[in-house]
Length: 192
Figure (tube, rainbow, N blue to C red):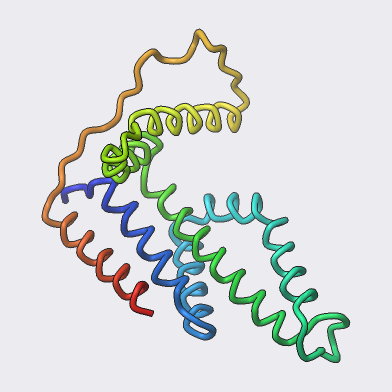
């Protein structure tokens, strides 16, 4: 089986985030549940880390929307409003959608593939005279530092590599089909 180009996986993830997050109420909560379940099955380790690191943001969203939004008071929950808790659930769902997709991308792509894919996705920035290579190098160095810190290694500046090697990948038929599907998802999100 041929491997997908990392850029097509990143574009699909971006399209899924936009399409799922643009839904309202029940469909939004269903999409967040399905993506959260998929991430739990395929990317449990990364999802748990991302949710743990985002726990204060999740709690803040719940409190700000649930308790500080005016509306119909709930008798069993002092200070919370029905409208506020619904708004909190929608915003928490959107954040969980993004965290789930990012967790699946982090599981599917190695650090070098992620950088190479983002470098390809950022190609249109060259029209604005923005260097996508500088962004890719900064991302690669950041990912290297995060990995070193996670494993308890401290690297001295002289120990860093002088060059960064990114994997070369070519686009195949599956990539074009995947990007077509991503385009359809983006169009669906834009239409609503």
